[in-house]
Amino acid sequence: MSKVSLKVVVAGRTYPLTVQASEVEKVQRAADDINKAIKQLQENFAVRDMQDLLAMTALQLATKSGRAVASANNTTAPDYTEVTEELKRLAEDLDVLS
Image 1 (cartoon, rainbow, N blue to C red):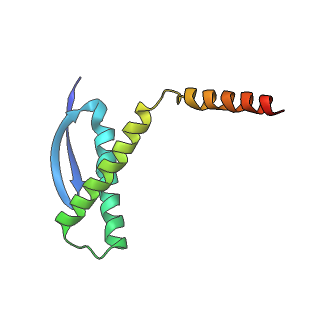
Image 2 (cartoon, helix red, strand yellow):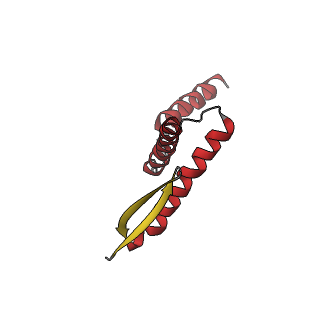
Image 3 (cartoon, rainbow, N blue to C red):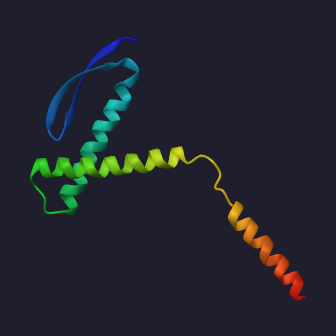
């Protein structure tokens, strides 16, 4: 794979990066997400310190990412064995009472 030099702006600062050509769009999207999150925090809260905004944004995006990973890892069907067994027992009890 070929590497590409790229400049991204995060929180008003420009950062030069070297990334795989296939990763350029992903990196640009990530920078856009960070900048949007910072802007949203600035608009919704009385926080102006950029370090605080970056820390809050990092926490927000890491939490969101963690939820996405957990959701992706939970691709197996839930185990309803215990519930099914309990329903069978209840049905048998009802049959006895009838």
